[in-house]
Image (cartoon, rainbow, N blue to C red; front, top):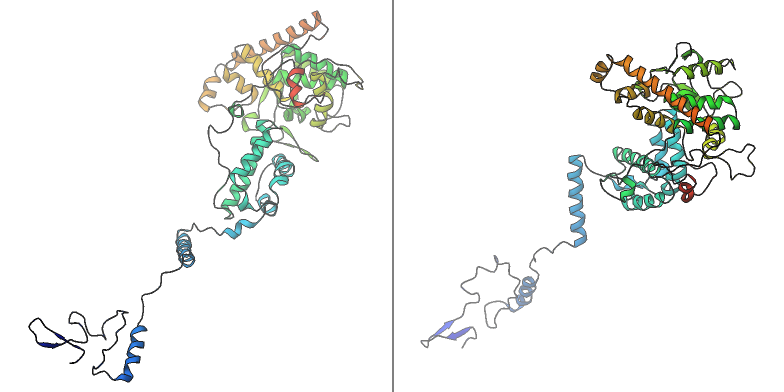
Length: 454
């Protein structure tokens, strides 16, 4: 009996087909199952091996892509999509260092020389030493956060805010230039210590304290310094406005001084001085002088021939930083602890800055119930046009009120000093010390030396 035959249930012999009836022809099948012909079949023996080989070498399904190639393919599609959306960022561009980027960034600035000088100082002193050698792409928000915390340990919050703000502008322009995908410095509200967000009140001085400080400035240097301090406190002018004040814009007989819109302020950098416009367009103004101050300025102008109202010894512009450190600061801080001081002066209001004389002037106007619009017009603050139209009808009355208040402040100060020639002890007052005291005391001791002024 043939081996490929088998018995049926009825006893008949039936030949078993080589291929099951339920499958297609072997030429159309793609199964990888090995087919071995049965012995005794019609298949030649020499073709058995070839059939087996052919059966085992049929094409197999494609292999799955490796994770590496799949990731690369996905990334390539993302890059192509970003290029179509014009949002593609080439990470290699962020390898440029901050020091290499700064010259290109500085060349795009169109700012006042004073602002550029301040930028250079902050970059050379703080930003460059910390991040100068870092690639832009390696500067992260966490790095800046740690640095900001370190800065707060030794600097005022306003100083730190200026440094971080400048770095934010530098990195923001790098984003615009395609060097970074996003700016790591983002301003979040209600973040950080609450003390950093509370604005500190400025120091201010009473008319008596200003007059005592002016008298001590005269002892330390000259009478011109005393006149400058009194003029600043009784007019509310900025330091640059008075340092650059021209004789041609000073009219004692008419009791006015004019802050010119073109040359109304002295600009000063480390190596250069020049006249330029005041801080804002509203700062160009005409200021009415109290009668006593007009007489004082007239006598002062008679002492020199310089076209500058407050010149240095050579007749040129005074260097404000040098004058403040040598004359103004000791006049209000005192120098009782300086064994080498040529003239002994007592503390009057330690920590007071020259700009805070302007703040003191505004405080006096508030105490005299001067309307806010009258204060803004005298100090050179911007006002709404509609308010100006209303104010123009009552300008004379408000100005007369201001002059009466300033005259009374002067008389009260002179009367107090006449009755108490010796400088009294410093009284505590709210206000935050914003500068290094003349006695060069450590920062933690400033409030104590100021009579707990803060």
